[in-house]
Image 1: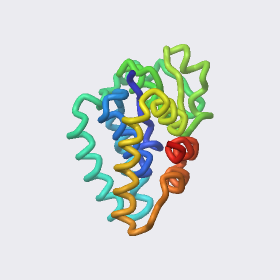
Image 2 (image 1 turned 45 degrees about the vertical axis):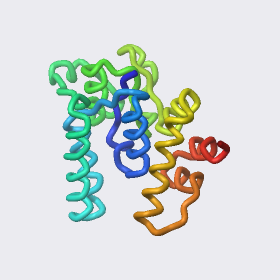
Image 3 (image 1 turned 90 degrees about the vertical axis):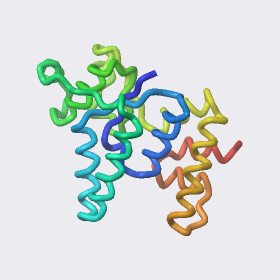
Image 4 (image 1 turned 30 degrees about the vertical axis):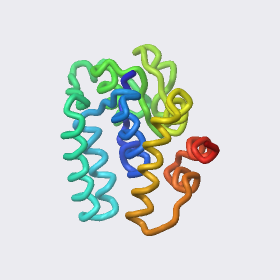
Length: 181
C-alpha cells in the first residue's frame, strides 16, 4: 500500500515518527512531494528560526532515508485536479503521480471522499490509519510505538505513558489500543 503524507501529519514529531516508523517496518510505502516537505519546514518555522533549521535537518534525513518516496509533481496534471482549497491540490497531485492508495491528512474537509474516489484514492486521518495498521500487525506497530515512547521520555525527561503520549500526538485511539496490549 502507498500512502501520500500531507505536511500536517509530518509535523508534529511524534505523529511523524509513528508514521515513518511503521513504514520503515514495511507496513506501507510513504509518498510526498518537495512542496509537502517545504510546508513541513514552514510550519516548523512558525515556532522560530531554530525550530525551522531543525526541521530542515530532519527533512534532509527523511529524504536520505526514503529516496524513493519523493514524487515529482507534473504541473499539467495538477492543473486538471480540483479540491475545495486550491492550496491542497499539490497533495492530491502527488498522490495521483505516486499511484497512492490513500492520503493521510488531518484536513478531512479539504479532501472530499467523492473527489478522491474519482482519482482512485481514499483519505485517512493518521489515528485511524495507524490503528488499522496496528490491528493488522500489532507486533510491528507496537515495537515502533515502544521506541517512540522511549525516545520521547529520553528527550523530554518526562515519564510519559503510551496513552498520554499518543493522545498529545493526536493519536488517541491508537494510544488506547496500545495501552491495552
